View 1 (cartoon, rainbow, N blue to C red):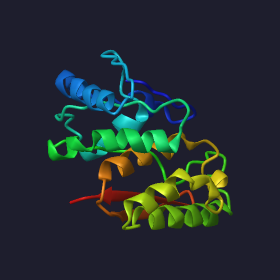
View 2: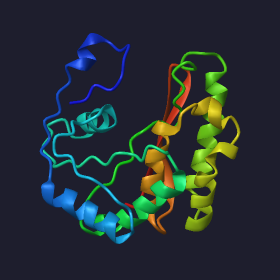
View 3: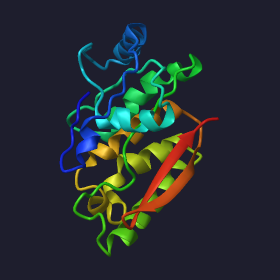
Amino acid sequence: MRYDYSGFPEHTYRIKYPAPGSPALARRVRELLGQAGISSNEDPHQGFDHGTFVPLFLMYPDASIPVVMLSLKSNYDPLEHIRAGEALKPLRDEGILIIGSGLSYHNMRGFGQTDATSVSEQFEEYLNEAISEPNPINRAEKLINWETAPVARLAHPREDHLIPLMVVVGAAGDDVGSRIFVDKVFNVAMASYRFGD
């Protein structure tokens, strides 16, 4: 486990998610990335970070499914992450669930602030329009240029919680995305999206 956050209640540093890994899937991921000219490394000792164990703990609390975590590239380049997703697209036909964990709004200083509601709603609307765009080229273009969206940097001062979406968009191919959930937490709109059935 990697508790890569701070300032949260003490019990959140005791969460355990003992899901098994899958060396075979990790090799397959590296093979597909390599075929696309994307270099990668494997670290069998890397613990699950909160972007992995939080959603999976809620979705699969018995931790019985094999999990392989893919780290982001440190440059956070949207296009590079979309291309990584494109390389991983065959996994969908192999029965692998690809999850891009993050938040549609991630400004820790903004949570609970009066203007955070408007900022989060405006940016989420931009994301929803991009994700539901039927043309995959136009969809990717909108997400590559996410910083041009209204209030983009107010919603994401750092894009670490947004970039996982780019991998999923790349893996989606021609599938059109849809918003499947939106709610408010501390006055902030939070949304989830899905591609495919």
